[in-house]
Structure formats: structure tokens, C-alpha cells
Image (cartoon, rainbow, N blue to C red; front, side, top):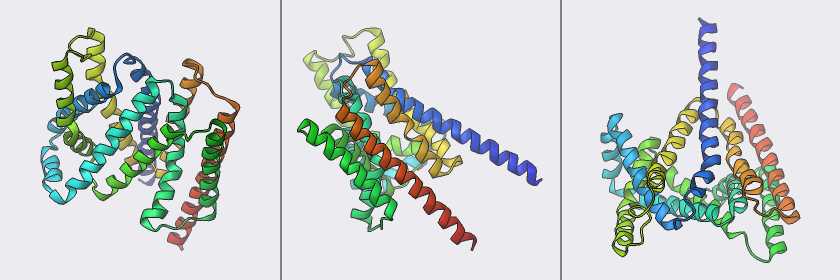
Length: 307
């Protein structure tokens, strides 16, 4: 009996790893999708991403019988400010990423998602009065050194990386205040900004400048498909997060920015200078220190729980 349960737990764990890998591989390959829409303005791509994500997720909501959950989530008016804030933050994050990818800044965009886990730790200290251990202090100092070095070398702040990291960190903090199932959460977030997106698309159509009605069938299909490529990795991630420890997710999450970085350098030939190499090395070192510190903290917590 015990062996059967152990095997079932192992299978569940392996399945969770596959789901998490699928999610982060999809996110890592997402730049290829946005590049295929390179001739279309980023704001228009974003509007379609919002609208078609909402349409696709609502289909899932009805198919899985979660309509009551969504109604309940939106009925609590005290959550509205947080929901609207989260919706605007993730929309801004999506737009900046699409714009960065399609304007030759994929390397800097990947830097933002390497910084993000460390910025989450810093935000916990600033806003939630969390305490840093020695490893986390070293990790944040190394990451800050990497950003400052890049700024000093190029004479400008890597604003794309920092804006992506800050917007996603603040979005994560907003999400902590309201806890929904991932599908319900995405449905609510897109519902909040879909009227704005539809209004913008109607305006473009009235001006005769929209890419959808006058575009090729392929462009139309890709714009509509933006909903699917947004929602599916989120669903895979949710399935993975249920089955495997957050520490495992923490390691797998670096797959996505690594793929984006490699695509930017080797496929799209974006510049990767010695200054970039130094900056990224400092940030990678920060992530190693942070990960080791995190694992040590988890082991100590387990020992205390057992003791």
C-alpha cells in the first residue's frame, strides 16, 4: 500500500515537472510568436491579446463550470481597486515585452525576468516588512551591481528590464491580495481591460488603420491566437504548481529568460557586448546565491518542523 502511494506521488511529481517545463518553454518561445507580428504596432497586438484572451478564457470558464466562481470574484467591490490595478500592471507588462521583442530589445527584456525574483525579495522587505538573510542581501547587492555596471557602461538605465521587472513584481503583490483559480484570475483581469481594448480596436477600424480587417488571413489568425498562447502556459503552470514544490518551480523559471536571451543573441543577432556579459554574470551569480540561500532556508524550516 505504501509503495503504491509512493509511486503515485512520484508520478504526480513527474507530471508536475512536465507541466512546469511546458509552461516555461512556451513562455521562452513566445518572442517567436510576437516577432511573426512585427509589422503591427505593439499597442494593437496588446489590444488583440487582451480581447482574444478574454474570449478564450471565457470559453474555458463555461466549459469547466466556473462561471459562478468568476461572478463571485467580481461581485466583491472591495477587490475592484486591486483587480483593476493588477489588470493595468499586467497589460503594461505585456505591452512593454511585445514592444521590446519587436524593436530589437529581447536581450534586455530577458534581463528583466532574471531580475524579477530578486526584486520580489526586495519588495517583500519594503512593503511587507520581511527580513533578509545574509544570502539574500548578497544576491540583491550582486544584482544591483549588474544593473549599475550596465548603466555606467552605456550611460542610460536599462529601463526596459527594470520596467518589466517592477511591473511584474507589483502585479504579483496585487495578486496576493486576491486569490483566485488561475483561469478565473485571467478572466477577471482581462475582463477589466477588455472594454478599453475593444474601444481602441474600434477606433483603429474607424480610422482605417487596423491590421485585422485589412490584414492577411495569417495575420488575422495569429492575432486571434494570441489568446490561446497567453492562456495555455498559465494553465500548464497552474497544474505544475499544484504538483511540485515552489523551490523546483524557482529553478525551472529561469528557463524562459534563458531561451529569450539565446534567441535574441543567436537568432536575431542582437548585440551582446562585454558589458552585457559582465552584467549578466553578476545577475546570474546573484540568482545562484539566492537559490542556494532559499534551499538552505527550506531545509532549516523542515528540520524545525520535524523537531
